[in-house]
Length: 370
Image (tube, one colour):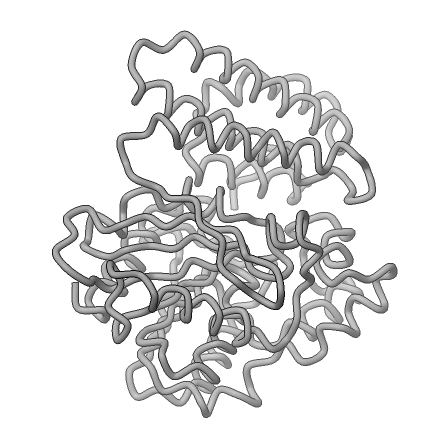
């Protein structure tokens, strides 16, 4: 992966994430000089990305049309999301920044020509926040895709990465913050857990109440750590008709054990794993994910299953994707490797994510009958 900050994978990877969500090189150029001169200063990282978000928000306020305002405000929201990533959870600015993200996203969504409905899915006495995006040309109940995030992404970022690529193919989409993710974590104190079929079961129960949804055609896409979440869900929830692991997670506990021995690369600050697990030490966080493994449950996965992985993924080795493929019992399974020439070779293809997005959207549309 090309590093905009040579030797600083964390900063470079998160900058690539901004591009995957629609970031513009001219915008990022506004803050690059200061960031490059202070490489590794996470305090400055937060400040500069928020400055950029504010600049773009001002640009949005000068737009003539609602659509221009919406697209520009979504961009401001994206930059605020990137600015949040290196703020420790105990710092009040973490929640303040996330609140700004939500405000910007809602402002953008309110003026968007593309329908995006704010929803709350009942779960364990509280709710999971989400956005329901109907198919472009609804004609009765349609197939629907549940979008699940990873260690440090949110439903807002998922939408910014995906936009209309799936709905244009005739499917509904539900972007949802589940335990350990986004608003479910920050607002509801719902931490991640191995038994991810439980929140997904509640999500499917909710989708089955909607007239736009064909219950027999519900699929799921999970990015990064979401690759484990969707595999677990597919193993124990037979209402899932097709599954995409966008980034293989075969044994997340081993991934972290390797990182502790300096055998792996971090894509997020180390405090993030403690944040999502609700633990106070790295040791307890790693212990809490000991059951995040596909091998014991792969034989239960019978639905069509796609794994997408980068050939030069520095966070999760390619061998894990091959092991995951072998563990999955489905007779309709595939490992799609992106090597740079056919799409980004880095973790979840952030260094060139559009080819992988197109592949996943086409594959899921084919398998859900759109």
